[in-house]
Amino acid sequence: MPFLLRVELPDVPGSLGMLATALGAAGADIEAIQIVEHRADGVAIDDVLLELPVGALPDSLITACHAIDGVKVLWISRYHAGANLSMDLETVEAFTAEPQRALERLVDAVPTTFRTDWALAIELGAEHRVLHSTAAAPRLTPEMLTTIHADQLDAFSGFEEIPATVAAAVSSKTPAGAHVALLAGRHGGPEFIASERARLEHMTALASSLQSA
Image (spheres, rainbow, N blue to C red):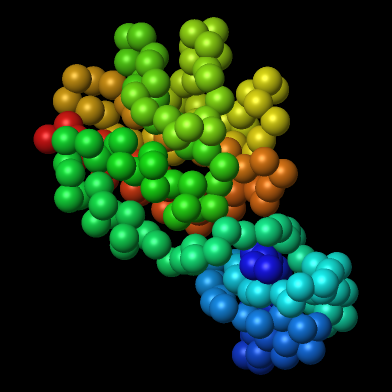
């Protein structure tokens, strides 16, 4: 049974090895580890993709992690089989291969690449409009769309009507003078961190410039 575990741990040599040993002792088979972020305060955030045997409880993983000084579990959830923790290059290749549909291809790839539940792209022009969305994305009413502003997306926290953690990214202006915002939602977390927002913003800008070229 696959699980994705996000942990905070001291950014010092040996911490990751201690974490892997503790998870192994709890019965977990680690498939992949991705370093998500290094912080200036000496803390790292890692994502761990692992398998638990049938009948094993995910609570055992949390207990094993918290037994290590300085380690904190930020989030744990079931994870679909076959997912890859490092898909940025594959995503960029997908939308650069079809520049006329770059934003559409990016939106479709965001849920897998960033482990979100949905994604959608919006053109912020004279009249805001949804350019493309995944099947699970919420339907935004005209009233909701008018509350999205290109110069305020850094502080955008989502809509009360949508029960999800939401991140937003803005591209550079298109030749028509509009901005493109990309919204992505996670139900229940984890919160989007700075490095994820930076990656999302970079990809949105690249896809927008390709499609507008």
